[in-house]
Structures are given as C-alpha cells and as structure tokens.
Length: 216
Image (cartoon, rainbow, N blue to C red; front, side, top):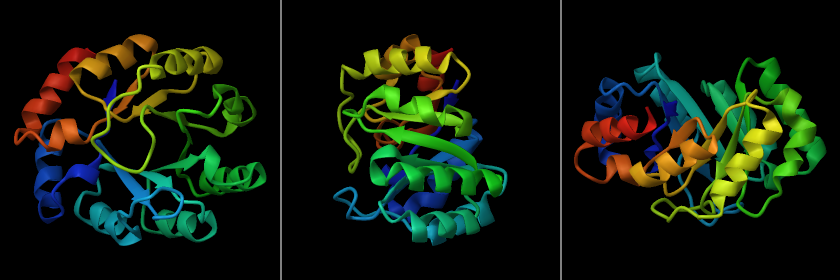
C-alpha cells in the first residue's frame, strides 16, 4: 500500500515545511496536481514547482497528475524538470496522442499512468495496458480538492482490478480519508491520494499514521 499525499491543499506558504513533516512520517511519493484552467476549471502549479521539489527533495518521487489538454507543451516541460511519474487523462486528448505521449514517457524513463474520470468506461484501459505502470481512477470529478468520495467508485475500482488482473496497480484520488481508503482498499486499490485529510487537520504526521493504520 502506498500513500501519495496531494500537495494541492497545503498552504502555499508552508509547502516545504509540510512536505518535510510528511516525509518524516514515511511518505516517499507526493502527488502534484497540475491544472490548466481549461481542461478543468482551476489553476494550480507549473513546471517550476516540480523543479523546486526535486531540487530540495531528490529522494522523494514527484507524481505529476496532468489535468491539461495541451500535452505538446506540458508533458516535455514536466519531464524536463524531473517528474518521476506522469499521469495523463484519457479524456484530455485523442487516442493517437495518448499513444505518442505514453511512448515518449517510457522513452524518457518516466513511469506512466492513465487517469479515468468517474464517467469514463473502465474498458478503455484494455488497449493501453502494455504501456502503463499504474492506473488512476478519479473518485471525484477533477478540479478542486475537498470533494466527497463518489460511492459508485467502489464498483469501478473492483472492475479495473479485475480487468488489469492485479498486474497494474490501481490508484484512487478524491475524497480519500480513513473511511473511504478502507473501502477503496477492500475493492482492490493499492495507491491512495489524500490531500485535505492529511494537510488540513493541523496534524500531518498523525493523519498519515491513521491512514497507514487502516491500510495495513
């Protein structure tokens, strides 16, 4: 089981401090939400944030969740700055583009992932399985942190795990807390993105320990 905290909900003026606390509590990968204000109705970080993260925390993995339909500019920029994992939305580009950029990531030794929104059929993964290191299922509609876990996600997680035959890990993102993480784990998820639950309670290490407890 892997917890990949989303830095989206960290106070921007306390990013480094909060990351250090989480890393000390055992976190080895951080989820970095990149939103362009077009594919999703919000703006977040740019490539410089990833560069700064890898400069100050070279031992930690930067998992870049790209919520943009401009891969031609965005993917190379984040690869250049040190992304360790890049997650691309199935809905963000035509399938031929997805094939191209997944191949590009493989060529640059970046771990690949495909993201599916709550309404996207799980079956679309079939044609990409040989190119993926992981799959991310959105358990909320992307764009904003702090949303509630969509109950129907449980069935989708189980469906994805069965399709992938436990060969590719399934990650979940959206509304993850101690209760929903336990539900998602039971359905077969093995990577958990949590933002508000970890960083908005004034006890980062305590929240991580609690989440680890329910995932054991």
